[in-house]
Image 1 (tube, one colour):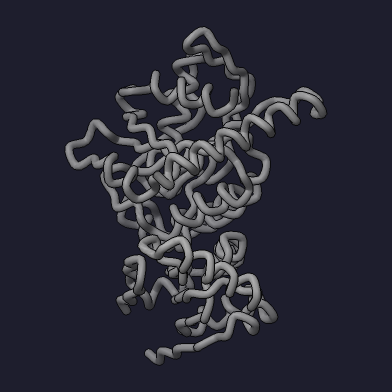
Image 2 (image 1 turned 45 degrees about the vertical axis):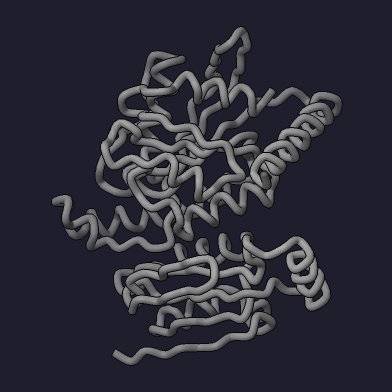
Length: 116
Length: 217
């Protein structure tokens, strides 16, 4: 089985939106986005996934990490939030993979581990 | 500390909202939603509440995933606790998931054709659950206390309720089981109020009812 990994800038994700993402996922592509998706975006991605489920495409595994660590001091948190406001996107990272391919994504606050 | 501050902030926000609602809103029926991942005991909890206050069940609970595939509503439930009373509509929702594989249903002896149909209905159920999210006045997020609570589905549900400013209670279900760990859920989501119950056995339901009343008053 051929596996593709696509590195997707968040700006491109916003432009392509969910149908294009799900189309890629159906073609055994693991997608890495350079930002944490908003809660609304995650929910919309789940909705679009549910609309696309077939016998061969059973859904997705999804996980993301934030750039703001719980252990950070208030000043660092504030600085990170300010940067996010200025650049207009949540920093961090999101991984999305087809469920048939990705067994699980293990998350600890600072890193994501993908089991394929 | 951060959790206490957040609870205080949320409580204040709810108070202000309830005052504004009381001033401007037409009297409408309160909607309490039961949300959560698949097989966490949502329908068992809905049944427990309905039996306790109406004397009849709402739906069929089962160990087979995605037993509830449509939104189920029980109207005009009146609950009383600590001298307070509350009338609401209870909404039991299908479990939210990011994947649904019809082959998983075959393990439970469901025929292939029926399993495919069940999967199709389950996908629609997830979409319906998400659509209903905006209509809720209070949500009880039911988590299975024997499972690891840190997964994307739980984080997405809680995050979306938070973003919509909908009051929520985390219900740590199945505390009657030996492997139950309500403390793990509390540590995972310290900003939210967590009540440990057994919907099946009826353990600690009084605390949950009190918490529901507190959240809406």
